[in-house]
Amino acid sequence: MTAMSQVEGSGVYVAVERVTGSLSGRKGSFALHHTGVMERGKPSLTVTVVPDSGTDGLAGISGKLTIEITGGKHFYELEYTLPDSR
Image (cartoon, rainbow, N blue to C red):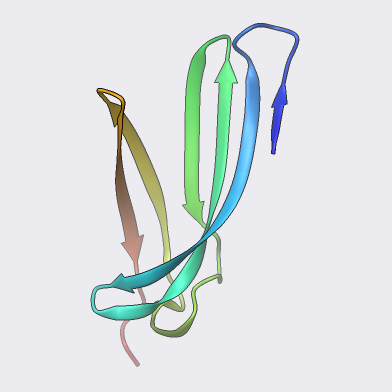
């Protein structure tokens, strides 16, 4: 979802996505919540793991995702923690 203001260069977007895959040899999925704010052309982005959204081997995951745009290309880094295996 997005919303723009009457001031040029200001607005917001929010999104939720489900990620499925393997991390540290553990398979499962989790959800990410995006909040992007643009204030008079100055961007701010927060992408966090939705609490308690991890499934199967990724149950209990927490963390955040950073997105860097360099030369028009997107680079992603997921910083996360997982509980000890049971």
